[in-house]
Amino acid sequence: MNRAGLKVYYRTRCARAIQWRFPPCSAPKSCNWRVWSRELKGLHITHWTSQDLARQAVAEGIVPQLSTCSVRRILREIDLQPHRTRYWKTARLDARFKQRAEKILWCYANAGRLLRSGLWVVCVDEMPNLQAIEREPIRRAIPSSIEQQEFEYVRHGTVNVLLFLIVHSGRMEATCPAYKDADHYIPALHQVRQHLRHLRGVFLIQEGDPSHTAAATEHYFQQQSWWRPRFTPVHASWLNQAELLNRHHRQDAYTAMPLASTI
Image (cartoon, rainbow, N blue to C red):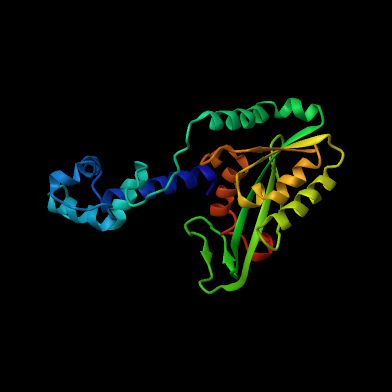
């Protein structure tokens, strides 16, 4: 069967499964029900679970029966996840925030021009205490079968990952210091400088981490002009592209790769 035939087969198969498991006409009613006020229903529930939603939908007479799997499928299709929460930190939009943000955004906007002048824009981020877990074997996903991993695993302690992101190319380089402190951060910076000694300098975008703002680190930056540090505003780490990329890989890559590929 060719690729087009496979697409038709799986599309038809999924459509049949949805039709038999849950009436399509009931899905919009369930979606409307979910946005009703909890106070109006007299339910003192701070977070809805799949079981709560299924039980209440049946109690309201929307459907005669509803499984938790169907609830999760409906929520996934409309991109709504009431069972999940996420913290955020509100940035303080003051003059200090504006000053730091403008310097960082200027570096991003002029990364190409700076490159032609022999200056790079580099973002740095750290992942402390990353668990080094070995799982063997790993069966990769194939059609009609999800990825399978061995349940048992071997712990190899933890590792600190210090990641440098080169903005103009998107290339990442990483090192694993023994500890997350200024005494190990400074040698890592010196190692990167030796590797990029052909450049005139580097604009280093970093957060206000204790190892980045320590007296020893500040003294190291003051002794030379090659590093040009730029700090993100307080509670605005999303201006650091390395952290955004790090967060993505921490969720999707580091947890899926074998130990030999992770470290």
